[in-house]
Length: 418
Image (cartoon, rainbow, N blue to C red; front, side, top):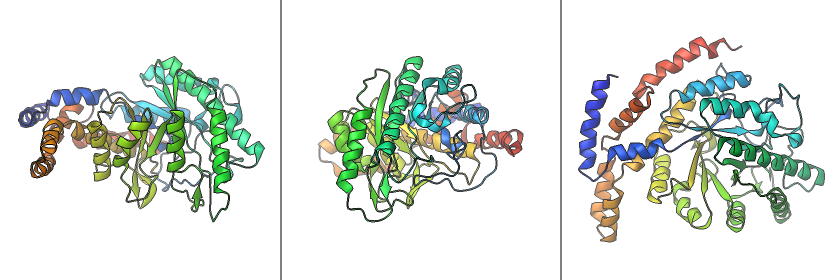
């Protein structure tokens, strides 16, 4: 797209938004400071580097599009390509099963140390990218239906030790990068059929978390993530939303809201203001559930727009961490990465362009008609011209131009992976 056309369209959009009290340059400046936490597992279908076989724990990557990253070098190259097509500077979220054993030899997950992620930390520093981290309870010989909530003490202790070590790794990442690494704890624990020991398993999970969080750190932050159910674990989930909200509010931990981990009619946006009143911060895993947690690629839809608007309306951009979490193996994985990240940023931009001051004045005055009318008119304002300018200023492809870049990368790189 021609630079002159982008600039001309932007000047018109800037004037149009100024008429309703919005500074488009200020909106772009705010968006520039929002770092998404990109999920490493989109490029390799959540395989990791342990050669652990098929996914377990009630999750599944569907599709067999060619070109999956098979090793650390390929995964890092793919992520570098993705970030070159997304405006702004962003983070990378690693799972524990992406440890680098090339120099140390393979160790089990209860023996992981920061040295097993040294190459990731060096690479991230070179790329100017900060890291977040996740414990990994699935796809392991000791990944039974219950891990941290297991009544088998050896199983429970194994996963307690694993998660403790993940916190230590996140602490080192945060120390090295001068910014806290967020450590997300999600376990798949549950039951396929009816259980009569709900309380006992949840008591075990609470006991495990209490042990895990005994050590205090300064350079990492703890998150706990709920789920409704997993494949093969449909009847009962130990770490439910109620459990983790109660735990996080009591212990001062961060709750992770995954947009696919709730019933289809639940509004994740509506949960934000409540959580922000009782917990220090909120972590988001943004994906697109179709019927349920199917981890489709994030797009601009009502759910994502409502969520980003609520963050801005709560004035909580400094308290909400936005990560992506989907793994689509049915289409070009690099393209999926880019679509989802840019869609999330587009939704954030629309939220930042909302005439919130005027809307709140209408609401305070009881002017329901005026409020609804302005909300509707905002939907057709030229936000896309502001987005194009944001991409131009960041030196990344504008509009659909990134499609050609993704296709070229496939032709030159991913198509050659057997």
